[in-house]
Image 1 (tube, rainbow, N blue to C red):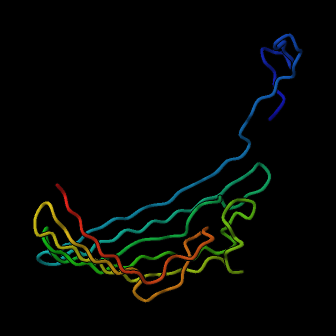
Image 2: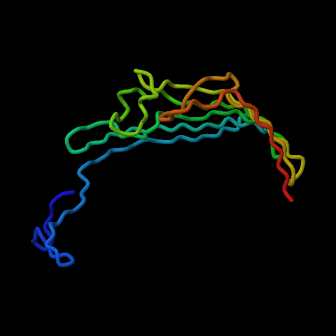
Image 3: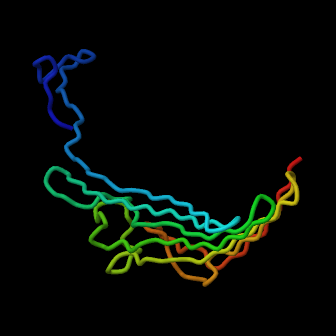
Length: 175
């Protein structure tokens, strides 16, 4: 809050009380840029290679000091190879997350650097599998295996490690 003049006056009468005029002002600024790439390539009949990649970079200036902006994740993405059609499909895919270096953390913010190593949050990658069978429009079955290698990892700024290897069986019935 900064002192302010309203109609040339530093004080105004408000509810019969002479009050100083203050105004909230943004004195800080931020620069944020990045990109997201998405792609899909049909390799051969009913086989797709699909991927997505996201990168974000930022700088925050509070008026006196430049520092990283908090809550900005490291580069991340997904790449998968999918085979099949409407009735049956299988997919193998990887999820990945880049390294968030400690120098890229806002140590005054909410990036949870207490959960990082002294160098920052390490990069990680998981290998996953999914398959779906849909015999008709009202019924479908699914099998997913996530984190096949049982990798121990943590999403950026999270205080909780992600789940290890897990299996998901699903059945959907519409009526």
